[in-house]
Amino acid sequence: MSVKPSAVRTSKVPKVGFVSLGCPKALVDSERIITRLRSEGYQIAPDYDGADVVVVNTCGFLDSAKAESLDAIGEAMAKNGRVIVTGCMGVEEGRIRAEHPGVLAVTGPHQYEQVVNAVHDAVPPLHDPYVDLVPPEGLHLTPRHYAYLKISEGCNNRCSFCIIPSLRGDLASRPANHVMTEAERLVKAGVKELLVISQDTSAYGLDIKYAESPWKGQPLKARFLDLCSALGDLGAWVRLHYVYPYPHVDGVIPLMADGKILPYLDIPFQHASPAVLKAMRRPAHQEKTAARIAAWRNTCPDLAIRSTFIVGFPGETEEDFQFLLQWLKEARINRAGCFKYEPVAGAVANDLPGAVPEEVKEERWHRFMAAQQDVSTELLAEKVGRTIPVLIDEIDDEGAIGRTKWDAPEIDGAVYLDGETGLAPGDIVNVRITASDETDLEGELA
Ligand code: SF4
Image (tube, rainbow, N blue to C red; front, top):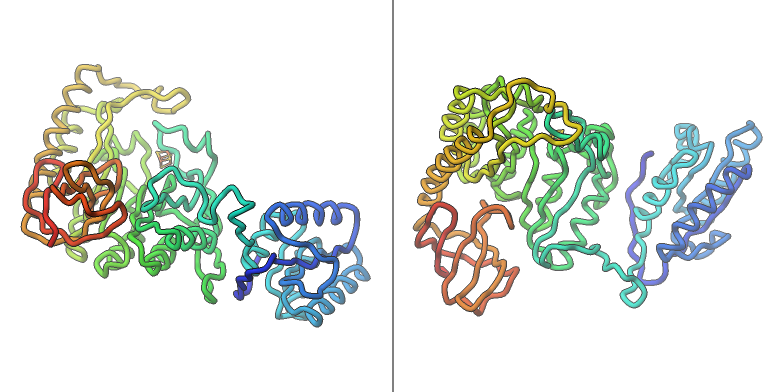
């Protein structure tokens, strides 16, 4: 499907003209599309008059039916001018566009989702606060000033310890303009920070071949870098989670250096030893990752990296573990969570030889956490004396608690501002950092 840009926002009930040609199967398709549009508050009109957009459900069975379909599209174009074509003739997009180059979108038979999406693009559904239970930005379980933005479902990787692909299927990316529409609504509703999530954020768009969709009058590719750049234009903090160090990730580092997106990468490395990574079947595992991180920091010195690791994976030797500790120090990972390996029912790793005894896992976990604390303490101490923006998360009796650009909510550290009870969650204030420990910072308003 391809769609031409030109969404209109109307304050009246959006009206969709509907022309249905063809057989009973096409009629059923029409009914499904109409039912969905009605449930979203669209008014359906049997003619073109006053319609914000017209959907023509075509037939392509016989040449005569095709000719009739092309005529119907021509009539809708002449009388209304904003036309979405669907149905059997939609498979001949080239022919339709050759005759009617101005159509907004062309979809094939049974592509209900795509037709409805094309209608959304042409004329967004009207939000009625008295009728709709769900606000336009959707329902969120996070505080009002930050929100998670899911860009895809599923995963194409097959890490040996993980069963997510068998539960959620392969990667299924959302069209870029759907992600952007949600993100923009969130920002308009007061969200200050967007947390981009998926199972594999850097693989975004691979499954839909980086399809373009219209955004603000321009085509926007469903590509990691393009999406990051567009999100960076919304004026909110944009934080990237679950990124794998594929080579193209290098491209977002300049966006971070320019302040368009936060200088923060959540990369679940899980390990550093090549042998363990191989047994884990991790994507994008490279022996030179520490050197790459150093290069990223050359471009963006403020880059913070958060990660998770597994110790005690089957076959992990003391040498593998020491390699991990050494790597952790060399890569200067700012924040890290560590898990002792546990088998998950159905995971391939359960059959691997070399199970690590529980007491060894426990001992490695403590050594890992101690090493990580040393790195974190050192990196946080370097922040003392700097004046930095802090996003306030909560206020209690003693003052305000916020976060820096290097800290995600719930998982990373905090900045404590004693006595600042006059601030509100969602405020972004400049703070001079006065003290640090192994996880958190203290500061005062600058
Ligand atoms: S752990 Fe591996 S397989 Fe599981 S969701 Fe993450 S990348 Fe995909």
